[in-house]
Length: 296
Ligand code: BG6
Image 1 (tube, protein in one colour):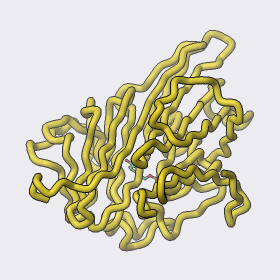
Image 2 (cartoon, rainbow, N blue to C red):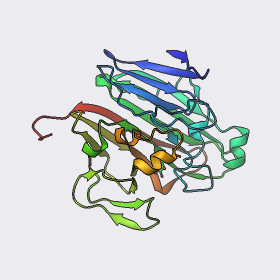
Image 3 (cartoon, protein in one colour):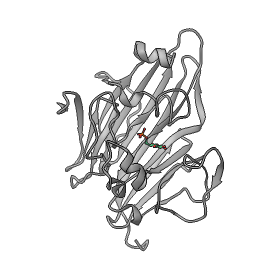
Image 4 (tube, rainbow, N blue to C red):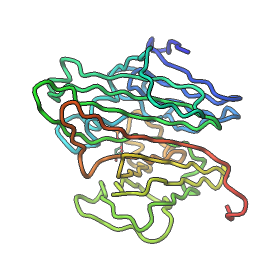
């Protein structure tokens, strides 16, 4: 289903069972809404978000490509999140899981202007799929289409913003004992302690070689998000807390209490593709009721 947004841009809606749905903005190739069976929103989007160029949309799942953060000379998080993507109406017959209820393939190719800042020809195919049980998956396939034999390297992240009831009541499991880089502290490497991660101040960390499954446990909502990643070694965890929240124009002062970013990523070691080579990186999300027995 294709609809026009208030900003005059196009958005796509995928519908699943009951009230499950996913909304995707062609601007950014960005998921901006993911709702469960009851129609409850599972992603955070700022009430102050701008939905039109040139700024990226604050919330949902921005795609950071070909650069994560400030790890290079490009604008923060690369340009993919503020470009117009197109829909592939005749997607190739890639293997499809029978549990998939609806999907769409978006394509991004560099414009003349993009080639000036990042001189590489590529095709980025982003498949967004809504599965049985309301699971959401994003599969990125990036191909080097340079015709002059040059390889290219990039860093990448699915900058996923989860909606949480109260950040002080949330814990993240799966990243304990991991090594990480701390964007607040500089280039040093740190090691996380043995406990689940909780939030009491600003956090901006890149967990290195993180496990393929990370859980976000929201006590108050009695909900657990399970984040599964493939082809993406790292996991970024970000919450700006009060001071940084105030400094961001497109972010409400108190909204940091209701959001958490856990971002499957490839940050520390850039990915290199030779001409003709393709890389695949996948994110799968599910939201499940936290079980009674585990004491939550
Ligand atoms: C996170 C980074 O992924 O994104 C943070 O680790 C950054 O350093 C945050 O502040 C938000 O970035 P932006 O460009 O969307 O404001």
